[in-house]
Length: 171
Image 1 (cartoon, one colour):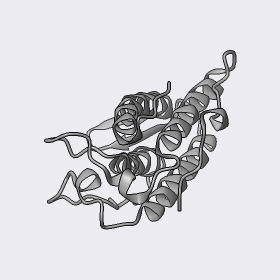
Image 2 (spheres, rainbow, N blue to C red; image 1 turned 120 degrees about the horizontal axis):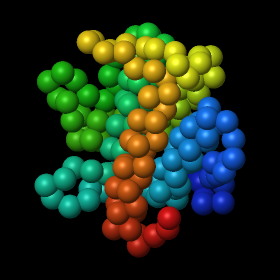
Image 3 (tube, one colour; image 1 turned 90 degrees about the vertical axis):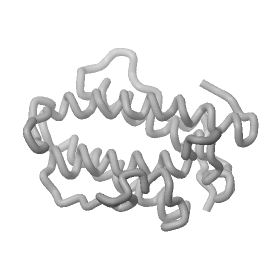
Image 4 (spheres, rainbow, N blue to C red; image 1 turned 90 degrees about the horizontal axis):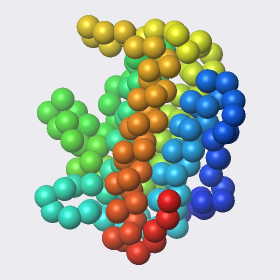
């Protein structure tokens, strides 16, 4: 499977809206941006590493952000069981390092499913809803802001990875 997304297909966040619409709009924009950065590449290109000693790859970013979506929304906000898919207690960087455990198609589909579940969880709760992790509570508002930051940072990595792979650049 080849990921198909172009810059025109991204959901632009609104410029004027209520807080929930702005937060979810910016998060979806960043999710779409990651899909765009992964679009049109072969499985091998998605696995291509940046530069030593970094183990960053576009596939690793998809795996990592699947874990992040599940950890913050499903586990913290919804209180669901969300055992790690790509890392273990013994191998904390498995999401970035062990790229051959799941096919790129499986990874992309799992990421899409995690994003869809995150949207459902968000839609069912108020922004002030509090979920918990050990020793601390987090509001849904905080999680949305954190996720925008998480994607924005990793999309910067994705920009550099994509440029290294095939020279493609873009916002």
